[in-house]
Length: 194
Image (cartoon, rainbow, N blue to C red):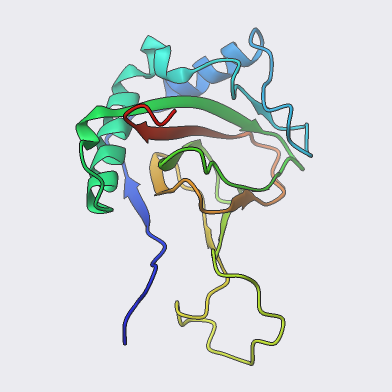
């Protein structure tokens, strides 16, 4: 059996990183930086997309360097060349109770990343959708077989990085927790593509 057109997704835990200062820094910034992402259906989630690039903030520099290194290695694993020249942009998201993010992708980029900075056991999951078109007539099948998965979700865990092709649709379900869920999001490109 051939596995054609696979959908790669990589999960990396960064247990040695102390995120407490960055959590406080994000909360502080959210009081002074205008929320971005005005093209979304949901307008509740605070984010700094196109209003504040965390890749230019020295407080994030150690973590940004580690994430960029992981993204470069991931792009190399995908077969792309010159991954040492990878360019980045990033922002953070603060989800309050009932906040969610609709299905979307970042298809103008090559690799995207989500870093779970602050989560709890009951934090909203991140969902990924198969790039194959929906088939309304799919017969009963084994839900544990990855060849028939239509959706896949990840339970958020502090200091965990998710890397995926930017054209992969993803969303965040409704956050049903009183504790904030804070994520960092990144898009990476190669050369002059962006």
